Length: 32
Image (cartoon, rainbow, N blue to C red; front, side, top):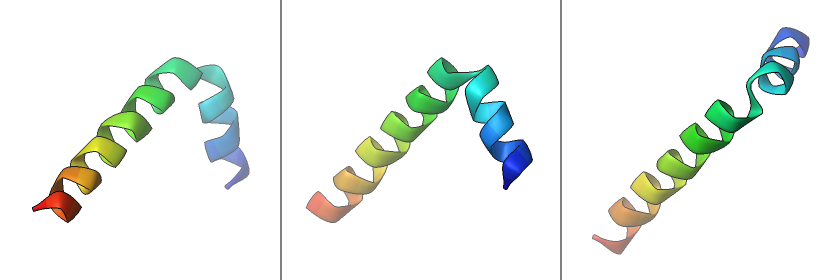
């Protein structure tokens, strides 16, 4: 968990982008 937080801190933009993509994907599935 700690290493994951460190990684997020190192690459916040990439992680945020991944999260946004995931949210879009899940919301699309819920809409369907």
